[in-house]
Amino acid sequence: MNLLKPTPTIALFCAACALPFAAQAQQQPTGSPVPVTVTPPGEPGILVVEPAPLPPPLWNPSDIQQLIAFIRDVGKEGLTPADYDPQGLMAALASGDLVKMSEAATDRFNRLSSDLALGHVRARDRIDWHIKDPDLDDGRQDKLLRWALHTHQVADTLTGLLPAHPQYTSLKRALEVTPKSETGKINRIRLNLDRWRWLPRDLGDRYIIVNVPAYTAALVEGGETLSRHYAVAGAIKTPTPQLSVTATGVIMNPWWEIPKSIEGDVRGKSGYVAVKDKNGKVIRWRQPPGPSNALGKMKFVMPNSKAIYLHDTNAKSRFNARVRAFSHGCIRTKDIDELATILLTQGDTEWTAEKVQETLASGKTVQGNFAQPLPVYIVYMSSAATVEGKIIDYSDVYKRDGKAIAALLDTQAAKTEKVASR
Image 1 (cartoon, rainbow, N blue to C red):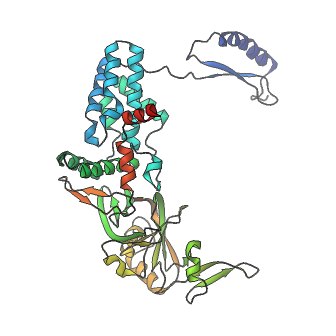
Image 2 (image 1 turned 60 degrees about the vertical axis):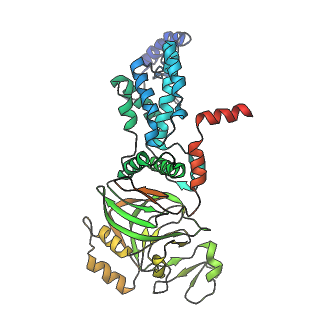
């Protein structure tokens, strides 16, 4: 007997059951389950009851007071309390209307949790930022809200959304100790606090982070910096985008595939090889391994749509410059063989430090894979801070701070005024 196909008796029973449910569907109160009849091809109608959406959460006054207190103190995170309208929330609380105060509190909680987890400045004002932040979506936000109300831990729930990186804590300390009269410095600190919120809260136990304004690339594991390297980033006319990719290994003695944007600079020149199709037409140019190769002796394997990767260079004198924005967008990394050796020899691999050097000396193009791939974050942090809160400013090489600061300071009240004046 085919257990998947209903017998006539079962089909009649389902049809009979569907009648009272169909009649009730017209009388369902808001938020009740809605029965839906699904009819697969060649099968009798099967009744499926979709789960009802949860009713809007109801807040009690003490939880709202927690939220108001958190909003008033959110300036220490570099955010503007007025963006979350604590006065309006207090007015709703004073009304005594449970529905009204709950709607107002939920609105503030959602706005605030979104900014704490994802950042206040959004995509269009971040400029060339391509890092996805999975920390919060509508479903998780709703669950967090209901958990906060169930446990009466509104403040703790919101605090749990903040970046865990030590640099965020140091920047907060810097914000705290900076005199309020130093507006420009304060705004820059606030912006870079927000930039940390643009990143995933969990960067991983082991990762590489490249800070373009600082011209550095660092390997971090277990919260400790294992290796830090000078870097050369994209020139002003070919800026390095901010992105997150996965590095799986390195290519030693790589060929350089010439980007179309600069193909005209090398076409026909000695030291470059034409790649032709079956009809003899040149489709691209390559540079073979060797002392003149622009990628040097090594490049990281980190596929991405922007064709950005870490690599060595044959122009090592560039690392001595104070401002190191010279590349076509990729990250030239000083002593990249040391960084690669650390990663190639971790875990169960065939690689040793001696084998890496032997392979580089051979001149042969060889790919070595890491035992465990790791994320690479290329970011744009124009300020850093010491543990004591001392600020280290870097040159805003691509002039991105101004637009982002303007977006950060554009309060909800200011937006309302703009709309009203139109």
